[in-house]
Length: 108
Image 1 (tube, one colour):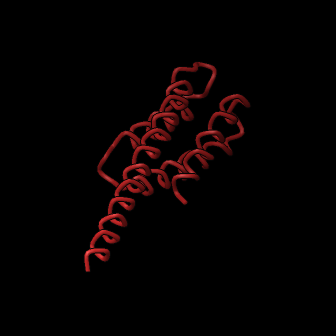
Image 2 (image 1 turned 90 degrees about the vertical axis):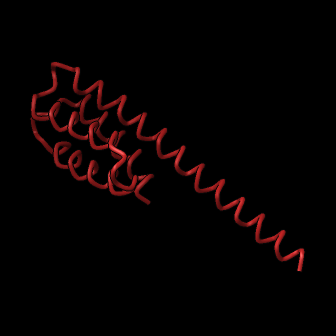
Image 3 (image 1 turned 30 degrees about the vertical axis):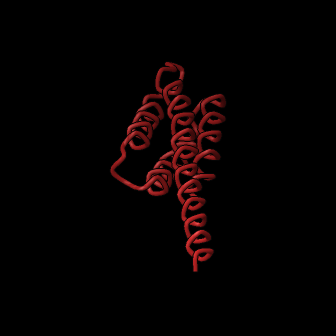
């Protein structure tokens, strides 16, 4: 009887650690994405519509209202659309692709 409770307790402890670790990793990824998006919004060589989308994406990632996967998916759809804009400079497109790959890892 006692060993069952001990094993159950250990399982719960490990589950909580994994869950909390996932939250920390997700927040770190959001922070990295926000830094890149901030760089895009401050770059005057990037067209305004791209900077606006980057700013909107930054705000969505900063909100804690939704689940991290929902926020990541929403931002992915916004950034995917602007990454195909023919007017986007190559350096900004590369940065957006970096953000997209970071967010893809959260979504899955």
